[in-house]
Length: 145
Image 1 (spheres, rainbow, N blue to C red):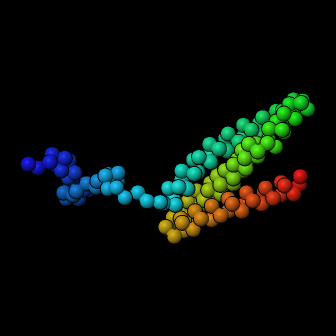
Image 2 (image 1 turned 120 degrees about the vertical axis):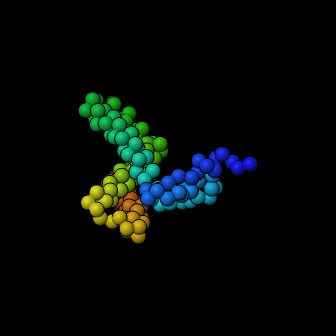
Image 3 (image 1 turned 180 degrees about the vertical axis):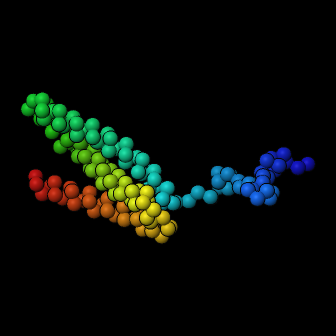
């Protein structure tokens, strides 16, 4: 007895020919593998959220600086704690990543860099640029202290 689900996998393409619909990648098991472009897309969204949250920290710092020396001391003590420094590091890395990947997207909006080798090269350039800019920013910040 034929399985009724087999009939659901047959459809017509734009030329009217009968074709077999593809199975879900989840059913194929190993269809999903590491893809740099997917990871960078997900990271772009996550870093956008991180930049927004980090901006709240910046706002807290600015309001405290405008309010009183005591409020500023409280925020400054938090920002100099290990957790505050971790948040600042994550915020700066997110900011640089989101900036560089945003520039990459602007190039795409202009029709530049759509070939797969260029997509991969620009993706790795964003990752490497993020690391370099984050390290340089923190080195400059530590040098000033």
